[in-house]
Amino acid sequence: MPQSENNDPKLPKTFKRFIEKYPELGRAHESVAKAADRAGPLDPKTCSLVKMGICMGAGLESAFRSHVRRAMQNGATVEEVEQAVLQAMNTVGFPRTVASWQWAWQQIERDR
Image (tube, rainbow, N blue to C red):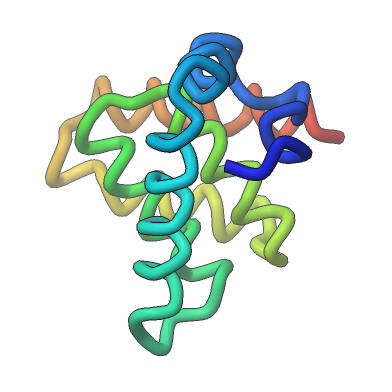
C-alpha cells in the first residue's frame, strides 16, 4: 500500500500497524483489490456498494464503514447507501441489517 494511503487517519489503527509491519503484504493486498476493480464493467461507486454487501454478510464492521465512505466519495447518495443496506435484509437477517444501517449512518455523520 502506498505510504500516503497508510497515513489516512480514517484507516483503522490495526490495519495501519499490520501494513507497516508487513508492507509487502499490504502492497499485494492493494494490487489484488485494484485488479478486481479493473476486471469488469462496474464503476467505482457500484463496486463500493457491492463490497458493502459482502461486508454486511461477513459482519465486517470496519471494512463496511470503509466501503460506505468510498461509495460516498465515488458519488453514492445517502439513499443509495441505505438501499444497499436494505438489500441484505432477507439474506443476512434483520439484526445484521439494522446494525449495518447504524454503522452506515455513523460513518456518514462522521464524514460530513
